[in-house]
Every structure is written in C-alpha cells, then in structure tokens.
Length: 234
Image (cartoon, rainbow, N blue to C red; front, side):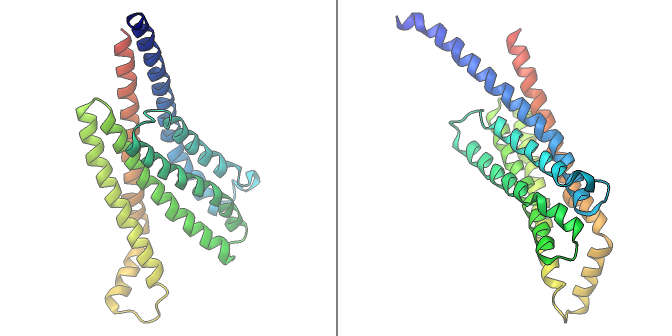
C-alpha cells in the first residue's frame, strides 16, 4: 500500500513545486517591471503636473504591483525561515510605501505644507530600505537555487548594492541634520555645497546603480528558474 502511494505522492509534490515556481516567476516579473515604474511614477507624482489629473492612482498601482510580486514569491519554500523573514521585512516596507503614496500627490498640490513634505521624506527613506531588503530577498533566493554561479553573483552584487544604499541613507540623514545647523566649519559647508551641486551624480551612483543591478539579478534568477523547469520537463 505504501509503495503504491509513493508515485502519487511524488507526482503531487512535483506539481506543487511547479506551481510554486510558477508563482515565483510571476512575482519576480512583477517586481522587475514594478521597480523602475515605481521610481518614475512616484517621483513624477511628487513634483510634476502631467500626472495630476490621475491623482494618486498611478503611485498606488505601481506599489500594489510590488506587493503582488512579493506575495507571489511567498508561496515558494514556505518552510525556509530566513527566506520568509526577508520577504516579511520587504512586504512590511512595501505596505508602508503604499500607505505614504497619497502624501506624494498632496505634496504636489500643497508643497509648502510641512506635514506633507515630512511624509515625502519618510517615503524616500522607506523606499531605500525596501530596496535594501529586496536585495536580502534576492540573496536568500539565490542561496536556495541549485546554481553555483547565480549563488556567487547574488551574494557579491547584493552586498555591493546594500553598501551603496546604506551609504546614501547615512549621507541623507547627515545632510538633513547639517543643513539645520547655523554655524558650520568651512569644510562642512564646502561638502554640503558639493552634495547640492552633485546630487544628480549621487542619484546615479547610489540609487540607479543599485536599482539596475537589482533588476539584472532578478531577470537572471527568473531565466535560470525557467531554464531549469523546461530542461527538467524534457
């Protein structure tokens, strides 16, 4: 009786694994497209006029897409505690970003309101922390997949991304604190002037570079999963 049940159990387990892999791929695709969309739409919602007729709907939609992606990924390897802990932290920050999205629109309409400006700053910090934790999610996922090259690349590049994001976070906090100080040494004033003039390069190095590397890792992970599934089905 037990022997006759083993093939059925194996087929059922394989079907469940394929379903969870399918959801994982859908989740990775949603996050891959959601990350650049969230960056562009949220930035334009906070400062541009062409999205005003749509209100806060575009910003809410792209953040919901990220939450959907994380939710789909959570069906994979539910028994792995480090993987689930990383997903839970990223999900919490994604929900915080979703809750702060309306303040981007309100700040655009009333830029002089201190409450809305403070909420936008909190949103930006939360978004950086979300990208930081998303790299932890990718590292945990790479560690579970049977591809040594992918495991090495995710470990190496996610560490670099997290260092860049942590540096940007510390610079941002220091900048917000120092601009409120009345009397500063000449060296610090020179550094603040350099940060103000070079904010575009800081954005490219500390935000766009980690974002692009994160997207590249997500795409490669998705392709490796698809290749392994189709090769095993041959």
